[in-house]
Amino acid sequence: MTTRNVAVVVGSLRKESFNRKLANAVIAIAPPALRMTTVPIGDLPLYNQDLETESPPAEWVAFRDAIRGMDALLFVTPEYNRSMPGALKNAIDVGSRPYGKSVWDKKPAAIVTASPGSIGGALSNHQIRQSCVFLNMPVMQQPEAYLGHVSDDSFDDSGCLRDGPLKELVTKLAHAFHDWVDMIHRSRAALAEDSAHNAQAAKAHA
Ligand code: FNR
Image (cartoon, rainbow, N blue to C red; front, side, top):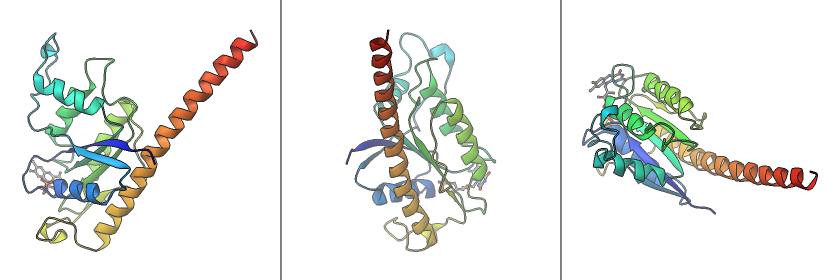
């Protein structure tokens, strides 16, 4: 069983955030082969290309280093005004630069959006997907996680998810995410091996 390091990025900065509690639920439920670490985004200075100098802000450097060392990403976030929260977009932008050095590149990902509303942050979810396409991140397709009607009642006094359909979906998602991350990394390794074999075979026939 290969251990995969997963960065969990939460799009809400609110202390009592439902999305943070859901992220913690996924961390608690996920198979042990996923070593999940929350990477904070709240103190990242707003992205400004002018600061992309020899000494960019220390917070950017630390964030990029943290994500670079990970094997996969889990985004858990609300929807703000039918789009992703600015703090999350800023984090995505910070990680994507300098050009050609994006720390997101090739990392498998999953996106969970949650809201007290009925559409569960679906538009935020798909906006993040759109960025992930450009950033070359293979995003898990199923199960989709637009978690609607999330409220204080979804959690017990210690902040854990109560038993019920929401917990069932989160459990399914955590296991599917493990399989997704594993599949992407194993396929990539197999492809690399194929390329090496092909290159060798081509040399032998030259
Ligand atoms: C919201 N909220 C919200 N909800 C939604 O389903 N669609 C939306 O577009 C928005 N827009 C929005 C904008 C702003 C600025 C705020 C502060 C809130 C409500 C939002 O889902 C709710 O506050 C959640 O509780 C936020 O998630 P956390 O902080 O609990 O994780």
